[in-house]
Image (cartoon, rainbow, N blue to C red):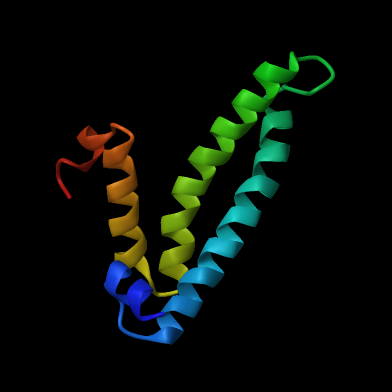
Length: 102
């Protein structure tokens, strides 16, 4: 636990618990929201090539996950932690231009 607290720059075990709960909720919710959203835009497994369908669905889950991570983290009082994590993740995948003013 101490290594995790140092790596994430957090102070308490309770904060680790809250962060883990946010990750669990966020992962499940992003998968659950992607399914109806992909059907809403008219893409289904029956009418679309499986490779195309799953590529679009995974990209959609990734985008939903990134947005919900900060939102759910904020609801649980961990906005600073998740915003810093999001900035780090966006810069690693090449979206540094989104972070110019932060």
